[in-house]
Image (tube, rainbow, N blue to C red; front, side, top):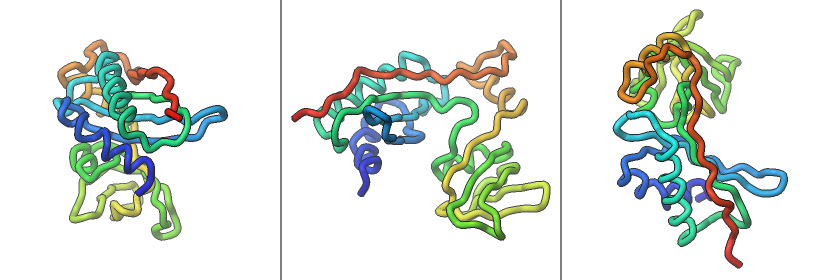
Length: 186
């Protein structure tokens, strides 16, 4: 089990109990120190606020003070997924069916790794993608990365949701809270 999987096991149950879903956890090496980025969303589909990010950050800090699989110092960053959110779980590919996405596979399919088209949902463990050149069937296990493409249709849908901005602006700012610097106990 790698470090990100261990972190997920430590923090996900508490965040779910608080009403949040973990979208993505990424640990990256910086020049001076590591950064642990946790992307989360509210399970009630309300827009994430700065206060939500702060609450999540404080909870994660407390949990990782007790059970921290990260060696050395690191910065904790908590953010919302934004409009062009990553699609990381099978449920995401069902929920966002009908929207334009781009994705990349681990293993090439018919000589290509990058795909862009309208998400047709999932059949069994396959992601269905309608592209101008035809339909593609991509195995979920072969997806390296996938994300929504910001389109007028996506923006209009988000504006209609509770907590969505109704001012017609197409700009989307991610709420991000960078918590206190974490130091590994000696």
